[in-house]
Length: 369
Image 1 (spheres, rainbow, N blue to C red):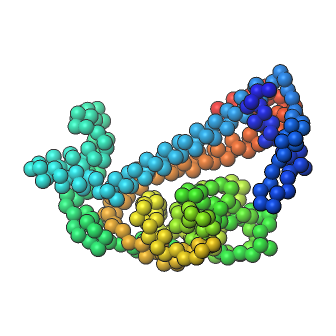
Image 2: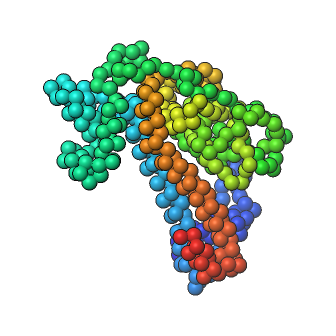
Image 3: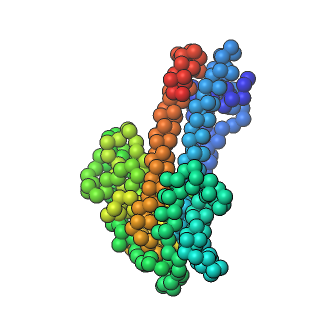
């Protein structure tokens, strides 16, 4: 039997039901005995098993590719944030150039190299062939100062103020709920399970909810949320940020008590604040505000009181312009993956039962492409 075909057959409702009927009753870990596995009835389609496996595997490959694209996009956004707002690379490039005796124009050119990662020859070519992009890069470099000052947080660029998150945004805790309020609904709670370990949004953490909530506790695609509770042994979730992803199944998404939404006065600041929340400095800060043994809790003031060197409004706006399209694409890729998963889960039992033919499934796949 084609190994990929067997892989998908084992995940079909028909085979999974057989497994559930014979599942072991271990006190800690459920198990399936080898004799049970040997006796599982696997639906066979000898003439089409390769095609069925290829159809289902290609859908899985599309989901994996989307995940890889999203990981790359988030890494790119965070690399820009770290370079500009943590390591201050454009500022340090200017300082080094001035200390080497270069004039202000050459110092700005050094900052352009730090921002773009391009060599002088490459920037000369860019200036000749892409003058608008070159001018934009030059304008960006000019927004960075050429000196540092000693602040209570250490050396930071001249002109940058020390601010707290509460100066830019309001942190709102979520809704406490009862188990009786968890039933079928077009409203869902964004819960602790909505966070990946290490941060980022999970699609399978929602709980359908019928209770009441305040308007400010409703969240939308792109909203920045932070976990305020943790039950993992390694504290992999508490203090971690995520950006809410849209879900067409629900009309309203509401944060639970384990979650807070960080809602800036200027919407574009959420991208800056998300990058800030992913830094080691922020994560170390939240750990120091964490209490509890089995269940960890983050102090109410941990997020709003976190201090950081704040760049100019122009620079924050420019960062938003650079990364907002990345996060919009992340949301689109996640939504696309959800649709592909639904298609895969629909086709799997129907292909194995013969209800849908290979040719019909391939036609659907063609429309998807």
